[in-house]
Length: 359
Ligand SMILES: Cc1cc2nc3c(=O)[nH]c(=O)nc-3n(C[C@H](O)[C@H](O)[C@H](O)COP(=O)(O)OP(=O)(O)OC[C@H]3O[C@@H](n4cnc5c(N)ncnc54)[C@H](O)[C@@H]3O)c2cc1C
Image 1 (spheres, protein in one colour):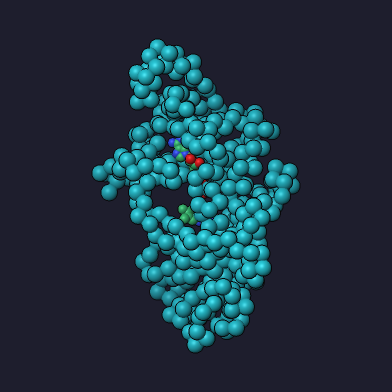
Image 2: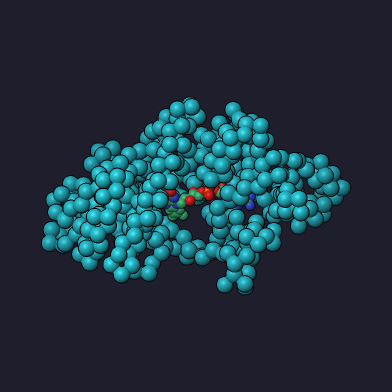
């Protein structure tokens, strides 16, 4: 499609442009979000000789889901999220919680290494300590006790505290408790070493380092339309850069395109693209800038409990966020009907992506 469009609109010039623009790379990465850029950095660190190109649809890194306010910035390590400890017939499983906690520890070690090596100059630019608390109503107090008993016995969570005392909970999370009756039975847990993470800041600093110090090539305004796998296992990537068709060849391909991965997979007729689709739902947060004193007195992310049967992403939470030296409170998510693949893309692309056999 891109080829025909280019030749139709530019004639022989378009054909020439295309034929002169087939580059061969070791690795091509689609998407300059936190996934794509992190993968690029790890690959280049393991093998500095690799030539790597990142193709990004937008004009900057971290412009989509990894952008600071397009997510809640919780360093997910199961301190406060009940969905990591499912209960089945009164038996609670903490395996998933231990697993996610261990994974997040690896992420923290990786980021600490970026700071140690001067790739990220100031840890305060992307990570801030916040309490991670869980608050539940009367009907889930037993569940919280069960969870606390299992988790606090593991060294990952041995600092976890549990309270049913109104005053104590209020001292932990004053904003979440404001306006509540003392007679309302509630319980809360608290872990002090949780984090708020600015994924946009990590991604941008890492992308800058990749370009300046590791000779990675990040091509912005480059929309990948489809990819083809050759019998030898190498890849041909068709894209459009500032309206001009372009092809890139690569030995290895990493698709870190977030919601944009679906149309690429569908158009490419790869087995991985079959029977996957997206629901037309999104999550929105209420956000307010707050002053430093309020931020310090709250200093927390408080997670509640989702309704039975609701997806984990619908858990209500009140989050302290820190970005560019300013403090914010985020409350949500509120479900939205959102038939788009990702922010800034139209409904037509979403409809074209849904195939009958996916349903
Ligand atoms: C409401 C909400 C709240 C969240 N809260 C949290 C949280 O608290 N903690 C947490 O850890 N995670 C959270 N997440 C998840 C987190 O934001 C994502 O997992 C993460 O940002 C995904 O990063 P990514 O690099 O995979 O995708 P993205 O950041 O979306 O990056 C993909 C990139 O690919 C580009 N792209 C797409 N299609 C193409 C194409 N065809 N050609 C070229 N480029 C393309 C896009 O422009 C984009 O830059 C939340 C997500 C949502 C939606």
